[in-house]
Length: 328
Length: 228
Image 1 (spheres, helix red, strand yellow):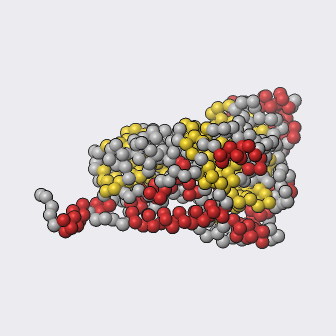
Image 2 (cartoon, chains in turn orange, purple):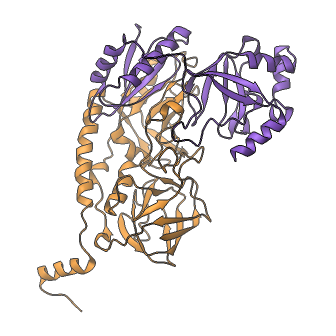
Image 3 (cartoon, chains in turn orange, green):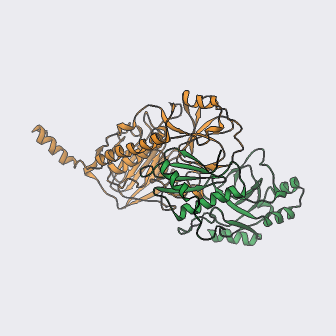
């Protein structure tokens, strides 16, 4: 068994597995990682199942101490841990070691994966934490301790994780318009697609409010509450849009002008307050095609980083064979 | 607009609407399709989210798409629902002691009823769960008797404890998390809506009728202790 103590955890740090489906009808959103690709990368590079339980680290950062070990870990997401030399890498924690994970120059969320079974509560079959209720593995708080069962040391995986370059585009966020776009003035639809938006610091796992022009509604505040999917851009009576994310409410009465395509949700989540974005409308057919293309690219990427590259000694040996010389 | 109306949502949803405003007929059509989809799930169906006038059909875009799902739903529209569509009567206990019901006196005042008459009217209401939303286990019920219909408060009140029995307009709900609310707090319930039971994790299904029963303080405290 490995054991950790949380020396410090900022706000919005929580345990997350891949998230749950099938309970939207009971008011339960999927939860799970804000950036699903980085989450899967951290687990896969460590030799874990892609959906294993991680700690999702927020801009607030995380400091933890390994009390029992050793155990290998992986960190992926944004540029978190860059200063500490941990960004996008697999490494091993020894008992007594303290690990500091701070946001680097980019990204809002990172994933710390553990080679073993993180022993935290499940709810509805998953450890994904729903922040508002605290249900699931739970929020990570200063002073907490947790165990990791069946810890492994993954010598053959230590080192950098290749970053998913395919996800680091700065093009517009693609959206499918609707389902309540008929409740907006034409000027609002034009502004939504034509103007540049900024993320505000009203940003948590439920969603992020955007700053930009006011989006004028028609008489829409009396519409009955409708089901909501992740990525929905909801506009309240004040004309301010909010992109609803991992812990979104499952139904709501404010009209949704558009929904951000799944393929662009990870990089949207990695923007920071003050970061800017534009929206571009695509058809539902295009959105489905994009999901399928990205799934294939993602599968290739994850298969590539899943392969152990050998122990340090084996890698040095390979170097040695290539160069024919190695210093003592 | 003709109904049913189909709208593609994002890359994984189809919103099927049966009307613009909530009527028993419209909501009944929602419940009927919800049940038919449960009994005959189309290829690629992930889950279905029923609401007041429409339901969201969530699908896996790796195996199906909006057009195929719409065709599958259309083909199911005339299908008979197997078994009863009535739902199952669920009981919710509620204690109306003043400290657990901070708005009871105001509701009585604003409706021109006595507090006991407010309680009696609420207990006599024929409530149904029409939709979940906001947070896990937040079951919106309709059927609050007309005599008790009040608009929401001007401003929400913070830190309203979980288990609060809330009303606004024709709607009622029992909160499952501590949160701010602008609804009127008329009692407190020890009945767990989020149940620690994998086979039946939530007390209600959408469509279930609900009966509130009055309990005294002793029974309330006992039930709270039993919940742990």
